[in-house]
Image (tube, rainbow, N blue to C red; front, top):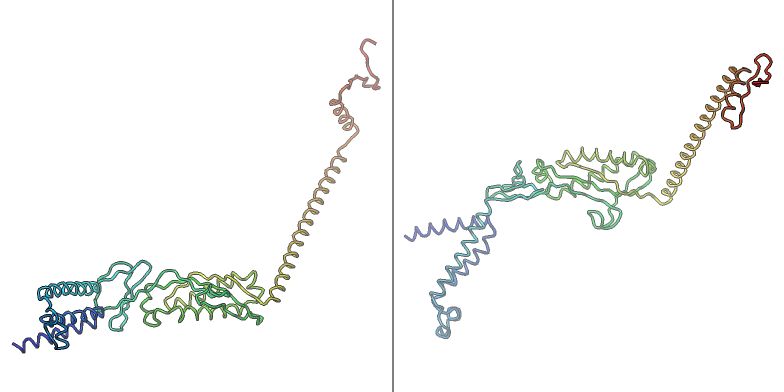
Length: 340
């Protein structure tokens, strides 16, 4: 009988040990249970008398019925905690915009849990990772970027000049590659992958352009090239680059003033070219108009005769008030008066 009880106690102890390893939350519950067990064991006599072994009648013995009720209620609470702890380990809820990476005893599984409710192995650890659009900013101004201090990217241009750049990159973790990223890098992939690749690509691209180009007309072209290179490099690591925002370019003060003056001069030259072109077109229009008038007069002069001019003169008299029409003799042009 004693041997059987010993075997049962051994099995129970092994099960309890495994449960404590699998569910550390049970450790405080086990401690509370041990205290309750000790409390029940000494409840038949005064605790003070049991500790000091002096004058056992100096305090009243604890009421066994009351002690039994306390033990029952405590056990109910402990069992409830155990049931909830064990039951909750069989499922997990993944929030929207997250994915769950599974790992069992340190081995990462290739399949991820998408958002929603999932039933799982209680021994499997689930690490939640963000798959929403995120931003990584490196800024000239302190406190604007992901790093607290000034974190601008200093790069050399084609002519060897040093420029500081403010940049923001929008990206997202591909859900189907979350397990690979977690296995190879961990959850801190921003500092391991995102930041170094951004700095490397920007310095590589900016070195192809002059300071004037990236400060003015080729700024958008450089931004698009940075985005394409980031898509290639980050995409190979399971991260998708969505957009690159080149927010500010800070040049040395003297260079910035020179570029501003040059750009202003170019704009003035373009304005003068526009005015000159406009005047040339206006002069051309006037020449064409004069040529048209000359040709019209030439044609009119060639077609005019004395009889035609007389006809035009007579036609013009119709519109004048007080004009009197007098018939004339067609032979000599003398006026004819009736009755004379």
